[in-house]
Length: 489
Image (cartoon, rainbow, N blue to C red; front, top):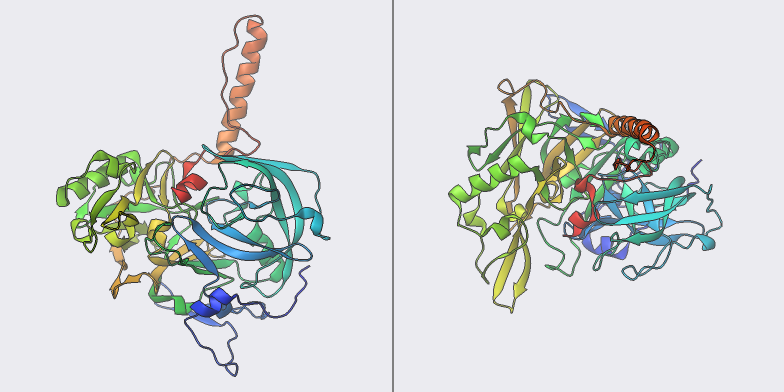
């Protein structure tokens, strides 16, 4: 189905940023040796020659505050847009109408290959939403796999609270599983289509190089790399440690323990996974269930300075005189994940430089910082605050996520992240992620309640109708972990 069109273009920004020089005489066929968490080696290869992983290095721009985005060409002739990379949703959606906060949009009338079956789609968030229609068109990625392919596109015709001031993207690339696709799972997600049409391995990997930088902290986008079809060894060091994907909707993992410095929070491991624990590049912060969040704050305050409650809840900043840094006042944060060998675990650790994030200066004399951790009513979310320390491998083929030390998570010669293992998991429950209600089950519950309400209405007739609240099956996402407002906040 794909029509291949020669070598991928490399943007001027990527040329300026490229850290590697490859001679034209060198064979760079992407057969990559990847260290695993076991004793052997695994291979990621592309026998068709459609991808060259080095061409994808530095194909992202942005940072944790504004989100990480990749340039795409959509339609015929191609219209270039920047697309937010989001592993916490599954729709590929682009602006298709003017909006005051975006500079340009995809004009469907100018594409000779755009087709629409006339099916509408709407996604509602706790704050913000967009509505539009489903369509189909050709897409290519200048710094991606070599070719053009046919993809499902949700064209955004109206929105509220979705596009925000200061962002430089005009759409969103949902890289999660079909279960999260709107209006239903029959809409094949972007990466699924790419794997099917190009025949590349069902794996992608992500390096995000903001290293805690906020949107207002730098004019030069920090950038990163989205490697589609495999793993690029030049982007990480050491071994890749893998954890199983518990459920294929979000990228759900199993968290066994959290430590603040050398303090084990010593909570039941089910608290960390209530109601799920996911890895989401579209979420800015490390988000923790309320009980876990409160325990983390309490543990930090025992070894740090005293701050107002506003600092911990994200409503106030903590400021120091220019030249002073707050890192010595804060401990490391560690998350233990279950290994592919279920009787073992490994630990990913971030230094305070990643979660105490510089925001802005005040009158040129102060440097101010925010707390890069927040509470969540919808589960634990390993967002950009943590992901910026690691090269993260989304190995969908083997249903596992990998973490390795990112080569760009370094500041002043100091590595901002650590990985250690393996550790025995004998002291934790065999299943820490039990009790999670998945969306299809919620739909069944919703429709059952609706039926009960209908019976009551018929019986009571003229009595006052009791409200029957339900989930909007047209596409509401009530999970705050994937809201755009948390990506920008």
